[in-house]
Amino acid sequence: MSGRLKKCLLLALAGVLLAGVSRVQTALNRERDELGLTRTEPLENAPPVLAFTTVALGGFRGLIANALWIRASELQDDDKFFEMAQLADWITKLEPHFAQVWIYQAWNLAYNISVRFKDFSDRWRWVERGIQLLRDEGLRYNPNEPLLYRELAGFFQHKLGGYTDDAHLYYKRQWADEMTQVFGNTKPNFDELINPQTDDATARVKLLREKYKLDPKLMREVDERYGPLEWRLPETHAIYWAVLGLQKAEQNLSKINPNDLIHLHRVIYQAMQLAFQRGRLIPNPFEQTFEFGPNLDLIPKVNFAYEEAQREDVENRDYYSRAQRNFLRDAVYFLYVHNRLAEAANWYRYLGEKFPDKNLLEDNPNSLPRQLTLDEYAVGRVQGDVGETALYRLKSVIEGLLVNSFRCLVLGEDGRAAGFQMLAQKIRATFQSKIKDREEAIGLPTMDQLRREVVNQLLDPENGFLPEMRAVLRTKLSLPAETAPPAISQTNAPPAITNPPPAAADR
Image (cartoon, rainbow, N blue to C red; front, side):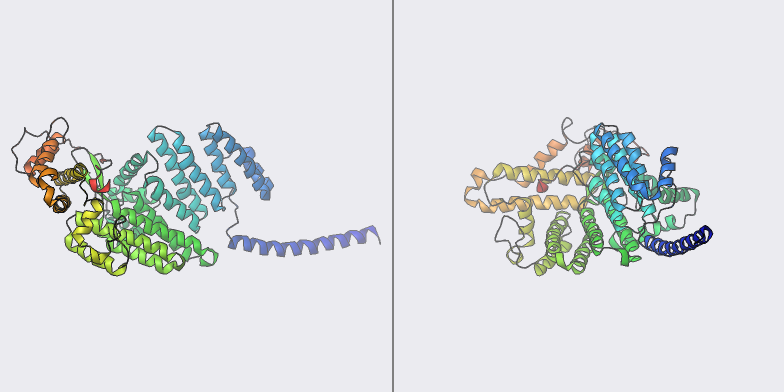
């Protein structure tokens, strides 16, 4: 065989092999695209050597990513967090369609690194960076990945909305301040946000969409289905991102793990539980703060969320059922304390019908719904040993309820104030009925005496309410003015958020 013929045959064979490889590569590219594995954009903001290397090595990106992982861990151990954060950014860009990379890096920023700083403002910057990494970048490359939506919603639910970080109140205040810039101090005007008519509205919508990646139309849908919600609180945003994750997943059900959808549903009902418990911001103009209060209007929708969860996740139905029972017990008690007695009675009846053989009070084996009246249940929730002669403990409980009552009265929460007063009176009456033969020896003071004692403490210039609050309380109780009350300072800045004084019933 001549050399020329041999070369021709080799060229022909090479052509056949290239044609075969082309067909295989086409199929591989199609499958990579279907699985969301294709990545062709160049690496941004990386040193030229790294950018060139990633392009030149192509499929060997994983080796580069591994080297960066090792280096990032070393930098974090050496407390070189800013250099580590830059490497984390490159790692996510090298493996942009691997959800766990985004989840780990964001979680590391928001949880591990943030707590290494003592200053709360420094912590908040790292927490915010973790949120941004998922929301602004991770979802950009993986818009249909439910794991990223679950993790982002979890940041709002746990890191911002929870209590595990001792800077949690600072996070809540910062987030409320940012949301106030968009919504003001009232419920969002969704019609204005969807169709802005003024320059101010247009600027706020731009901020909402471009910085926070929130869609006003979806916000309105979420509020109508699960609300009314307080959009300045983080648990509302947990619900939003979980709902958006479910919607995106529905467009790609063939590629989605059903368990991921269950996790998103859990985020929704857990965040709604939080929104029910403390999903209302009560402005305190005297202290320039916000206090948390329960959002009782959510009770029907939270209950529906539990019912829906039990239908969709049959395997864990018992778990949801127990959670629903605990929620209903809280709902009845909260309604009672807020003096919404008719609603409390209706939900108490529903609780008894749905869980007729479950005790309502943990420490009382004789507390089935048919064995307790609504009043007895509410009193039992406050003090488990109300039948005992724990005089000073009960007196402290009653005084705590009265303090909360007068505080609510000053803040304009008249229904809640009346509820605390009523509950305090019933606790005293229940105790007195148990000690009829020894009332003179160990009986409690009268309600008038208890109220007078608490009012005197609250009106004490040294240890009581602020001067403005004392003046309002005197007006509400028709007491003579102490002095001319100082003017309340006016400010355009949104109030801060602080812990409300703990109710004695919750201690």
